Image (cartoon, rainbow, N blue to C red; front, side, top):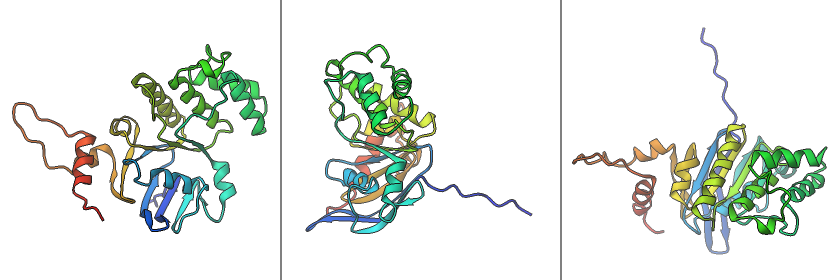
Length: 259
């Protein structure tokens, strides 16, 4: 007699999600799932619908159709439970530049009614390599430091799911690498991360799975290896050239007619 396999409940489950603004269809039946403890990248160009999807999943916007579940809760029927399960970091760091990094963290911990806000602040400063800068005003921080502090603030209360909406927009290459390391650290600790990005290298560096959102639809979804397998075999000349995610993206998007 075989032992039954236990199915793992997705941390995020999206089915047939639709959203329009008057005559503009932004989401046209979006489907995807995110496994617990993984990094899932929603990849697409500007206007593809990435931020709209994040807003629906974080209960900031109502969908016109379809369904979405976050941490086992329905975003429409159980919005309060969803909000307790998540943290959302937008495209721009939401930090108070007049306060120090440590003061920002303590303030948020107090607002979230956490015990021992000072200890929480010190632990997060250490975790994100900001201890030495903790006493300085955030206005003196580099872009990468602000972004890391912003992500640290979003983790107060230990939400199981974190949404990162284009977390490295406007950052220089070194700052982007700093943020990437911070995001990888979240997954290593078991946090589920859904990030949106228009940077192909970012999705390639971070994500366990990548969904390409184009004109409001998911046109590909898989691991990096699975997406690369969608392309024809590499041409063997002197050196076999392996496809990049950019090759995959351009091949798939280029093959989709404008509707």
